Image 1 (tube, one colour):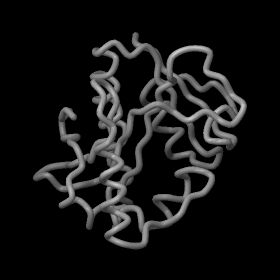
Image 2 (tube, one colour):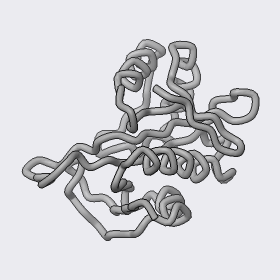
Image 3 (cartoon, one colour):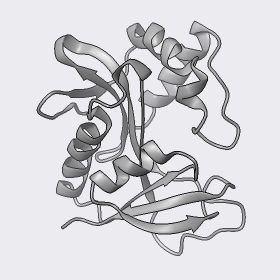
Image 4 (cartoon, one colour):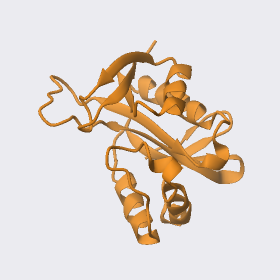
Length: 175
């Protein structure tokens, strides 16, 4: 998987050496509470290593799951661009729909890293021919909805089309 850069950030593949950071990140309820209808905190380093293996398994020329690092290679969060699972009974009617998502360590919230990382990945993905990206947020996740708006994503209302749950849907096509 490729590395993507922005002005302040480097987005790179996850490595086993990142397990302690991932465990710290995803053992925090305030970080994982909006990560799906069955959110749960991560409890062990073994869980972190298994999650890193799953993240590395996304092997695609456009999609990926990246570790976001700031100055000096300090890990600050996670960004994904991958096919989004449809809810039971939903039909895509075409190619896989692709979602973008992020979660960052609380110590760096409010510094613009989510927006900057997402902009870099979107620029790369649209440059590689991706035609559309969606983001789904928990209706109460106002911070991620604000990131979607800063990215220039269009709010498309509430939907239950993905993850068997109700979300606020945002979408973007290349400009």
